[in-house]
Each structure stands twice: as C-alpha cells, then as structure tokens.
Length: 137
Image 1 (cartoon, rainbow, N blue to C red):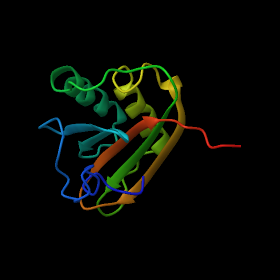
Image 2 (image 1 turned 135 degrees about the vertical axis):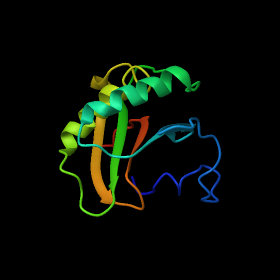
Image 3 (image 1 turned 180 degrees about the vertical axis):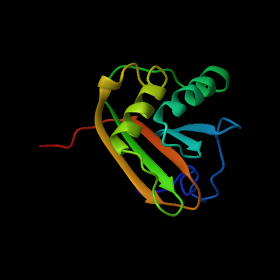
Image 4 (image 1 turned 90 degrees about the vertical axis):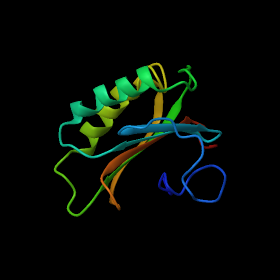
C-alpha cells in the first residue's frame, strides 16, 4: 500500500473525505479501487479486532456484499514510536477472520496478502481489499 488512507479519498484532493462510513473506531469506504477499512488504535490482543469489525459491519455497513473470486489484501499496522510486540502473521489472520463474510466469503479467496508495519502519526490498522488480477506470465 503506497498511500495512507488520509491521502486516498478517490477525488484526488487528498482531503480524506468522501464516502466514509462509520463513526467509531472502525470506518470503511468503497471505491472503484476496492474496499478500504481503518481501525483506530492498536492492541497486542489480535482477538480484539473481530468484535469491532463484526459490530461495524452489522450496524453501519451498507456497502457491497461479499462475492466469490480471488482477492488481494493489503494490511498496514501504523504505530507511534517503538512497534508493539505483535507478530504480523497473527494480526493478519485475526483481521482476515474479522472481515470474512463481509469483504469476501472465505479467507481462502485471498490470493495475495501484503502485511507491513510502519511508523505513523497515530496508532491504527488500515486494510485495502481489491480484486486480485494475476500478473501476466
């Protein structure tokens, strides 16, 4: 993911506005490029994310429903200062389980997965889900 969510808003002005759903810790927006999700705050307890996303999708999300096919998922853990002691593979599994049934039917549909951590202005997790288009051979 080359751009943070604040920089990507689909209308090119970089104001972060336009089309975000959610007023709590979890927010999402759907664009032609895919589904963008953000969850403010970090925890070393990966199981913390599932109920947050579940409540968001149940109460606030009115976007597209999951479909079949291959997906690419990009996850960025933004941290302030030293990164928390959290294995990125555990974070990825917890987040994929959290959005399964909403962004796609099953996490076996994820054909490409990129997970990274980087220092940022505030602690949060960002996720981008797009249709996977394999590179030509």
